[in-house]
Length: 233
Image 1: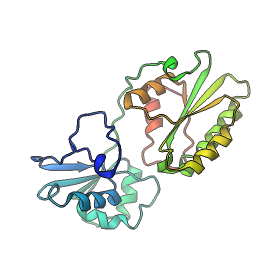
Image 2: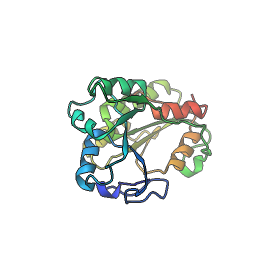
Image 3: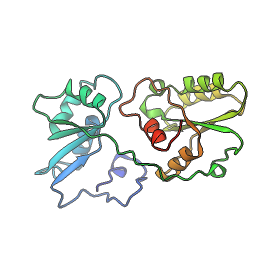
Image 4: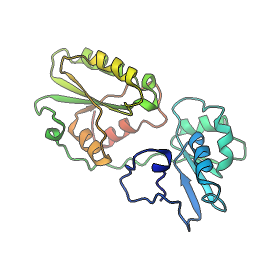
């Protein structure tokens, strides 16, 4: 395993003990970077980590067509693993004919998260609705403002509260301010921007009764899939 977080200037937050150095004896590499970032990695790390190895690009995209600029990065991999048929079809429209593309969905095992509303300051006597998104992955595509409005339209009797879990907020203050303005001060919707580990996110989902996702398009749809695996509405 090769954790490239620090190389890209990100905090090291993987739930594992991956090395910051490329592997020495691996026969192949499965690279969880889309083509834009893969080209950057090759420029920073040089050719040595990839030379003589079978390289797989594990790619995701959320719209019907991948960017034209992806084409230049496709020469860096021997095969593509797409997270869904939707992604595979989008990649295939842009890929060379001889580039193998396989559908390898995200594994979504039954959740081991434990309900712990107290840890998140959530009431025990209310229905809890969870919506979650990453601002960096497309604010309008994730559609959180519509989620807030839909929740309020359905919650006229006040029996529920909603957690709006947002990641990647630091780089988009104007968009976050827009969402904060929509949420207001009524207290029925809480914006949560804390970074959570995978275990904490699983616990948050376990503490909710309903997962609400009004995304306009998704490459896979991880939160709805995890919610279904956890038996949530």
